[in-house]
Length: 97
Image (cartoon, rainbow, N blue to C red):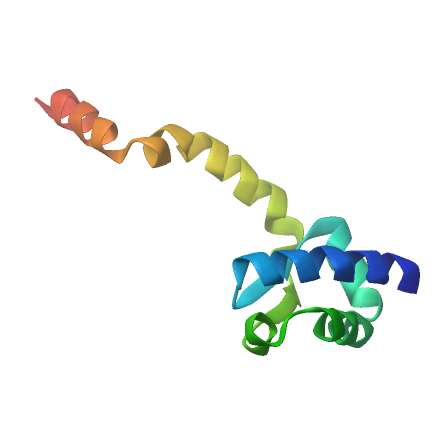
């Protein structure tokens, strides 16, 4: 498992150095790897990442659990609205007229 965590640490290091996030949320398989030894992963990432981006970054597992697929399905249903909210408003006004 530590071998997998080492590979994940390299990927996270690259993303953190490049994007400077405050929070990294791991879901699915990556959350499972993270849960095996979160302290080990955090130590590896801290050792490899530049100090400035790492200082304010936190790594956590997603908390969606069994609702993960439902949220993805909801995003698909609302995709047209999210892509162009103005078009939906015009459509709704025309429907009410």
